[in-house]
Amino acid sequence: MLAKVLWRSLKARRQRLATAVMAILLGAAMVSALLTVTWDIRGEMGRELRSYGANFLLLPRDGGTIETEGLRIDDPAVADYAPYLYSIVDIGGRDVVLAGTWFEGARRIDPWWKVTGRWAEMDGEAMVGARAARELGVGIGGTLEIGGRQFKVAGIVETGSSEESQVFVRLEEAQLITGERGASLIQARALGDPRQAAERLEGRLGVRAKEVRQISESEALLLGKMQLLLALVTASVVGASTLAVAATMLTSVLEREREVGLMRALGAGSRHVAYLFLAEASILGIVGGLLGYLLGLVLVWFLGREVFGSPLPIEPAVLPITILASLAVALVGSLPPVRRALEVDPAVTLRGD
Amino acid sequence: MELIRAENLSKWYDERVCALKTVNLSVEGGEWISVMGPSGSGKTTLLNLVGCLDTPTSGTLRVCDVDITSLDQGGRARFRRENIGLVFQQFHLVPHLTALENVMLAQYFHSIEDECEATKALECVGLGDRLHHLPGHLSGGEQQRVCIVRALINDPKIVLADEPTGNLDRENEENVLEIFRGLHRLGKTVLVVTHNPEIGELGDRVVEMAHGEVVGCRGQKLYIPREF
Ligand SMILES: Nc1ncnc2c1ncn2[C@@H]1O[C@H](COP(=O)(O)OP(=O)(O)OP(=O)(O)O)[C@@H](O)[C@H]1O
Ligand SMILES: [Mg+2]
Image (tube, rainbow over all chains, first blue to last red; front, side, top):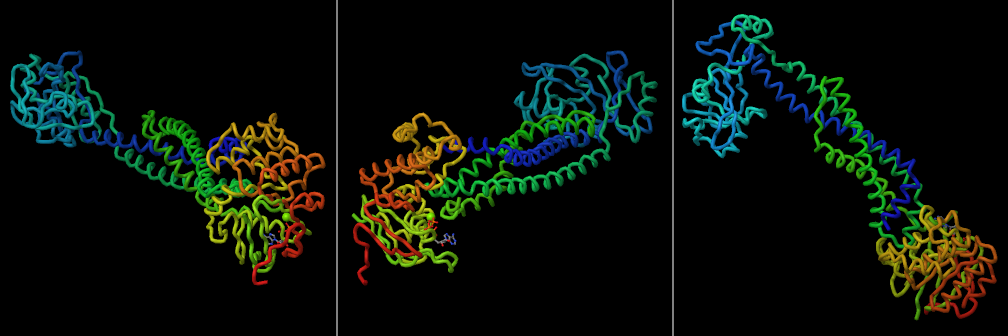
């Protein structure tokens, strides 16, 4: 019966309720857009942190590898560098990416790697990416057999990226295991603009340089500022939509005073009356939240294109959060009107004509 | 059995308007009481007090052996849905609910809806083919019959009707009165406010009111408290 009464009265007053839904919708759109952007900013920040690492790569010009025998880059602009040799090896029956590198260089380029345990230093030591460690079932101090050699796990690496499924050993040992010479690439970090240093090295080493796109600090700052701005706008839009819901629901209660008085006269308890209006508010909240989420997606798409220059990833968790927030807005906005409805005096409203 | 007993019942609005002063009244179960009197004499006020829609300013009122003055808002709502059926001059149907749904609404507040029972009750008053019409698409007489069915659907002990035929033509008036006669035969206690002396005469007793007081009582004797 409650559902029937709700449905009929929603239908009868759809125009007025559309206003409330609109108010909730706008708030919900802002909330969902803010959340999506915020979610993405974490990713952006991670990428931004990487910019403290390598800012260009040196790759072999025509497939093959880069010679590392006696490799020394003494370009004044290049602060750090580390060669990497990648290959797929069998460890305990699984295919794993083995990365051979010079740990001293790697450590200077990627000081932000989260290493549990410690960085590997010597022959016979390895670092294992967190995901690889889980799959291989090894921990710190454990041993791995790679290509007939024993390695002791010195540390577990977390980077939030592909490194997590790799196993790191010293470059020379990787070369022995795989029979390869040289390195697949060299990661390098130049001070200032990497382009000139990269050009010089291209000629000297006979390699191809590739810039690693980084997000500059100013861009990161802009993201932070925009997040704050969005939060402020969202807070005011949510506040405004709560007020709008309150106003609409109050009008709705005033319009229906006679109906509420009648229900009271028929013996409806406070519970019945409150349920009716709160259920109505919940429906408005959920519908407004859903539509707002959709509008938020459009907003996010627009922001991604116009502001970030690339589409922002859609985070599924934003949907339930948006709907819950809209529900909260609708219910909080309905509290004053519901109180008003509970005060309706049947004797007064049923009098007169 | 005495079903309604009012002693020195008074009702003031805003501490200035006296709608009822020292009304004494006793109604037996199964009686049909006609309440008559000029406009503003307090008839609706009396019905509202008995129907537990309003609280008296002073005096005592026992209905169905319950001291109404001691009930809180929730208690009054519960009392109304258990014991009272209300019939209004303006029908007061919920405009966006069908005839059947209006009746079922009263069932919902009381306990549980029973569509079958509600349908049967509406068929009994000749509305079998109007179940799914909205009040706006029903004639006044039909609306009043829906209102009466709604008042009776939870089997109340007391039916309170405030000018139930005030907005109806002769024919519909007769239909409605026929329903009340049936109720009376079934032993329901009925209080009907009316301006029409012919309708007044249908009651076992006519309670005459003026200026907030009971000024006369034809039929059986007026209840007089002991101290008088
Ligand atoms: N809510 C109220 N506030 C102030 N005065 C009121 C209120 N309700 C009723 N009154 C006054 O109380 C008196 C009795 O009103 P009541 O409605 O009981 O009369 P009535 O006999 O039913 O009249 P009618 O035949 O016109 O329906 C009237 O003078 C009316 O103006
Ligand atoms: Mg009246």
